[in-house]
Length: 107
Image (cartoon, rainbow, N blue to C red; front, side, top):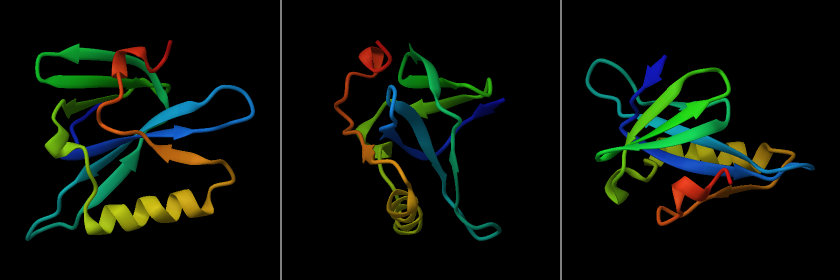
C-alpha cells in the first residue's frame, strides 16, 4: 500500500542493537475530516524519484513524500502527538534534520 502524507519527518529510534528509522506522516484535515498521522513500520529501503522520496517499510507499505524542506514539518496537533510519543517511549528518539543524506541512512 502507498501512503502520500502532506507533511513528514524521519525519526531515529535508538535501540540496543542498531537504530530504527521511521516515517512520521501527517495528513492535513479540513472541513469534513480532522488531521491524522501515521508512523510507519520502519524504513527498509529509500528511493529518490524526481521531486519525491519513497520510503519502503517492513510491512511492505511505501510512503511517498515530497522531497522539499517546506513539507518536512509537523503542525500544532501532530507536533503534540510526536512530542507525546517521544516522551512516553522507552527508547531515545531523535527527529532527523531535513538536510540528512537520506540515501546513506541505511548504510
